[in-house]
Image (cartoon, rainbow, N blue to C red; front, side, top):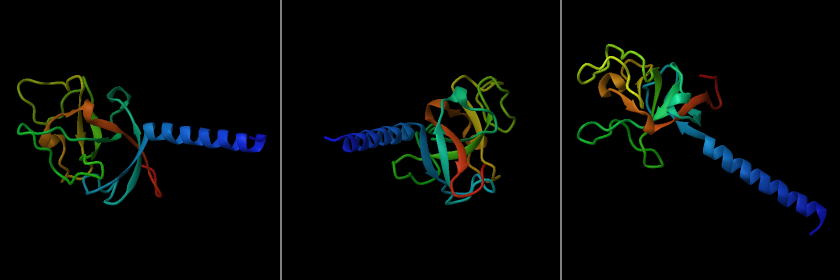
Length: 153
C-alpha cells in the first residue's frame, strides 16, 4: 500500500467515524402538523440535538414522545418512519417549576415533579400538556436547534 492510498483510507475512516458520531448527537425531524405554527409549519425539517432533561431550558423547542393516557393510548398523529410518534412542543415548565394553571394534575401537586416537564404547542389548537398533563423525560429526544433550509427558530 502506498502513502497516498493509506492516507485516503485513513481519511475515509475518519469521515465514517465522524458521521456515526454526528448521528448519535443529531437527528433531522420533519414536522407533521400545525401544533407549532406559526413557528414551525407542516413539512418543515428541523435539526434536533439529543439532550437529557437537565440540558433543556424553558422556552426550548423540544421533540419527545407523548406519554400514554391511562388506557395506554398515545394520540394524536401517525407514527413516523421509525414507528414512533414524535411531538414537537415548547418546554414551558421544568422540574421544580410551578405547574401552569391550565395543566391538569391529580391531587395537590403544585410543582412539576422530577423527571417530568410541561410542554405547549405554539398553536392554540395544539394537543399538549393542557390536555395530557406532564410529559416524561425518558421520552425526550432532544432540543430543536434550527430549521433546515430556512430561518432559525
